[in-house]
Image (cartoon, rainbow, N blue to C red; front, top):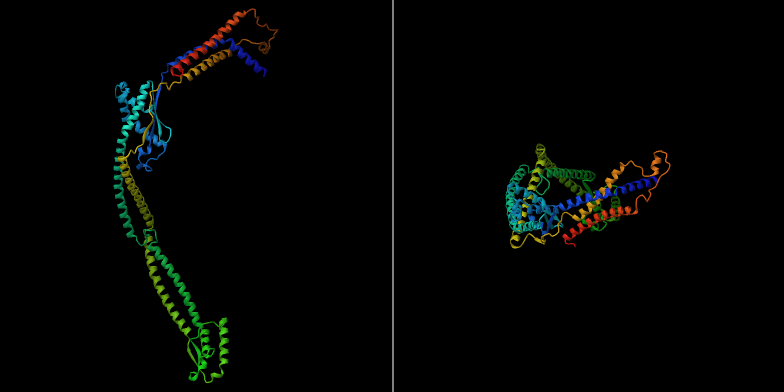
Length: 504
């Protein structure tokens, strides 16, 4: 810590001994810098704020087709409109810039310099600032005002020209797409008629081949169900008796027709013939039949027993006949549908890329049809926009802040430059003195001698009587005056600039 303090003290003492050098260098740097600051020519800037509905400039016709509505694209369109070469040449001819043009080469340079010097800056989505800098305030104002006038004068004619060009373009594209669409429709219809049986219908339904396959599968299922029913009926027929026993009374006695008599027993036997022996209902019916016979045994003398055809058996035979006929019909249908299916599958196997080709044809047709419909819609929108353009101002354009002749230069900022030069001058003087101090080989204290390992007896301090007080005070006053004069020069130049800019 003590070594650091000693080092700082040494540097401060060395700078103080070279204070006149620091002051002289600061004066030299400041005078040179201030002279260069005042040598820079003034640049005056004229500004105007313009409200432009860029969507109207682009027209709704092209929205979503080729350009979007981002502020960057709006700025690009506005720059191309305002800073086009015809507009810049008209600008030169209407201002004093024409006086400085001596030939085509100079005109070309002037057009390029104006295109880069005129700035269009977006502030909001539809609000833009047009600015231009020049060494002459009136010229800066004339350039900005002329740019606005040219844009306002030409916007109506440009809109109608753009609308007519867009209409012609749409008509041309619609004609081309119409021809392509008709050719695609003819190719699609021809392809469908050639492969109608194996292609799906227009609504995306099943093709004839898919229908034939489904019919074959359905008929085969129906055949299995009919075969199962036939087997069941055959089994029931084998278990059913062809005839059943029936009793009748001679002379037609009324007891046989009474409830619970032999007639009822005959009905029970008909019902039993259609059931198996182990059915609980069969057992119950047989018991009831036996009971009825016992009850009417007294009145049954002379009854005649004979065999009659079993109606259940006849019904089963008829059912079996119908099932056999149905099975034969199903077999014939399966044979026909299978033949039709095999024929269509053979055609499909012969054309392995048929569905891919059909998909490509449909995709091309759908794309053409979609683009054609969109162009038709755009044409109708263009007609509406053209009608609105003839009856109302479709392009919204308003000058929010008109340009003014600038009174204060926008560049350079001399107040900032003067302050920067003052700081650089002081820092430069101190820096040069500090560099010279690095080459100083003298000793400034006894401690520095002792570090050299030299025998030091003692030191003699500065005797005040050797340097008179008046001389020392004069030196301090002179240095202070030099510093104050430097500050006064800075302050005077600063006041001069502020007075020139109208702040004092």
